[in-house]
Image (cartoon, helix red, strand yellow):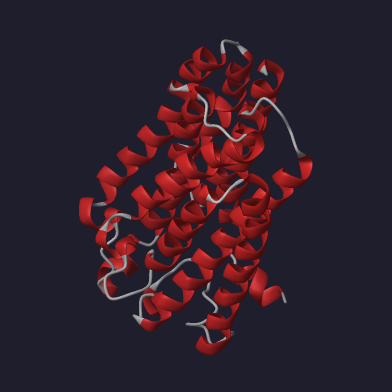
Amino acid sequence: MNLWVEAARPKTLVAAVAPVLVGTAAADRFLPWRFGLTLVVALALQVAVNYANDLSDAARGVDALRHGPRRAVSSGLISPGSMKLGIACALGVACAAGLVLVFQVGPELVGLGGASIIAALAYSGGPRPYASEGLGEVFVFVFFGLVATAGSAYVQEEQITMVALAAAVPMGLLASAILVVNNLRDIDSDAAAGKRTLAVRIGDRATRGLYRRLVLGAFALLPVVAGAAQSIGPLVAFVTLHLGLRALRLGDDALAQTARLELVFAILLAAGLGLST
């Protein structure tokens, strides 16, 4: 079981939890069971993406040259067949929880869920995975920022508000920052294996600049969120600025620091939004 947990890349799961917290807090009402199901969907999709990435990178020989944490399939710890089953199970969990929400909220969630699943599989799979086309950050911003945050708010009150949309943007920026710093670490091995991530395409220096803009951009947008909420509550997330500045150093533990930043940022932003509604 520990191998499956490791393959799920726990540090990156923050990108699934954080937007659900913020989106739920942006809603005018709170239904705990809907929150729980939304969290299950988000986490299951993130795990499916990570498993699929592990499998696809092993098939393409990407992980053979990487210097980061080991990957399950390329290390021989989990067979390709077993990983495919793991992907199917993760998607099955997401679908089961999502269908309950569909019956309670409405059929419009079917299209949203279907698009999320297709995006998860196309991220690193298929003939032209868009993670290798330099579009991974766009996927993360859209689905783990805009969709996850605004969608979580919609699940609660069955409408999308300006508050939820405003809060979705900084969450998308921080989620993208996690991917950027991960790809920065793997830039040499990805380039050698022919995986053309955005970091590979623009180079080390520009990738570091992009990372800094994403992190600082999240903080710069807090006044916009506060304006949409008509409350100073969201500004409490500025307390995490010291974590952001520490992450900007881009040290060896930059991935963990970025994940920590997004989680604490989300908790405080959610608290501020909760006090505003």
